[in-house]
Image (cartoon, rainbow, N blue to C red; front, side, top):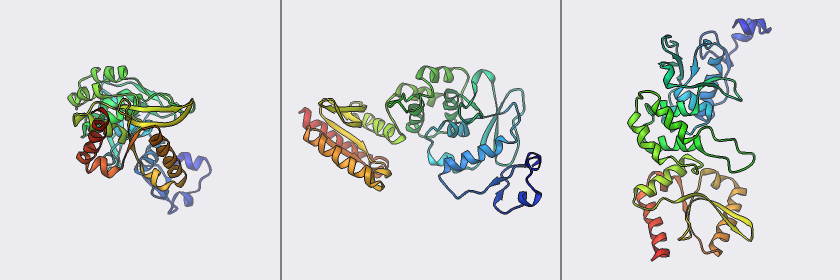
Length: 296
């Protein structure tokens, strides 16, 4: 509030109806409802105006800052996670989940673009073992954190599997067994949460582990980059996100790509969200039949 007045903002403006009061002493413009991660980022930026100098964002809030894929359930709660190192006392405020953490169990960084104090990507993943319920989601978050760039303009990987291992071992963790179970399943190649779920669904059904992000070329030209593939059998498994159905340009590219793959002898199995999350047994049956038909 004082900072706003010092900048010339009038008391009348501070009382305006388009300003929310997410935290004591903070006013923020009310924006149209967007996706939950964007809303959470807005709360993070609002709180950063009054954050104590020794505090940092952690847990779910840190995952949002780093752009890690969280299940929707975790973003339904509009509280943010703020931590301090012991022996300091955790912050107590409306809309804040305060945490006291051991210095040995966390590395704190400043986000390179947002300039916010935040637990490192590896430390963040280790913290999420306490709140992420499904083992596939825990693997999917780690997959996103270790994903190496595939294009020149892709951002660098946030961390490495070795750093994840060190973060888990650095301190006694709530959710430690789940983290240790997830580590051997982490791969550099799953480019989205559904792709990780797809890979693990197939493996846990007894199928061989598919290769991820497989490039198919003809005459030096890139025909397709497949989400998952059984290359020896020439079976491709492609996850169709919502944008594949709503973006006309993407839809045309998909049609051409699948026609090209079919001419090259590939079987293409297209997978929707409903297939993966509601009817996985039917999905597995389709993939198993396609692979068996080529390897019989």
